[in-house]
Length: 224
Image 1 (cartoon, rainbow, N blue to C red):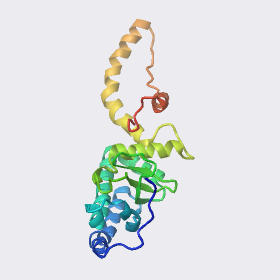
Image 2 (spheres, rainbow, N blue to C red):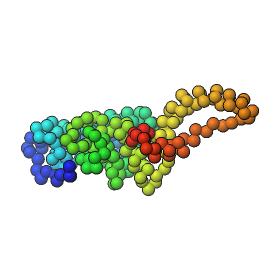
Image 3 (spheres, rainbow, N blue to C red):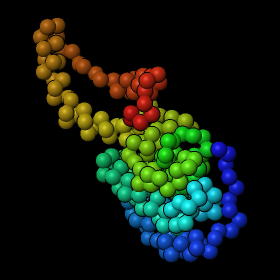
Image 4 (cartoon, one colour):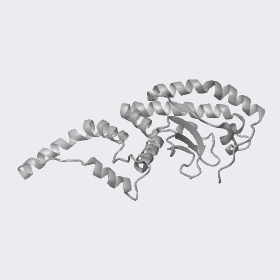
């Protein structure tokens, strides 16, 4: 499906819904998201640009303002969950990679998602995506932890400041390897030391493993 031109003018009932259910909520949601991320963020969603993608007689077509509000409120909840899991490093990574500090909503012209998802635009915007025929579907999942981690990873490895592992990945290692796996490795290292008669350091070499996994033919997009 090609990109559609924006609607020149929306129906009266839709304009009223946008005023009542989106424009009156926008400032509060911007503040809530800015508080979560620790820096000023804005929301830049053009109802006229997304309305043409709504299916006829659908909720997205008649209640466009409420739908936009739900997308952004869902993004707020998911950002809170993401940072609750990854901590300060996750917050820093979002702010650094999504450098425009703007959330927007757009059609998935590149067919990257099945129903919804997200990406980081070339301008550094955090873009909530919807696929053809699915505007208003699975709204709360657009910025899910796996979708956001995938978008940040793609932006990270393709950007000018590409690095081996994202901050979110490093946090995951800290959260899982040190407390859960390292204690199980220690006894095996002791056994190996006795067999070899010398001290041997077992190095997980995370960055090298990460590189192999990243380019593997069966590597899922959201494994990180």
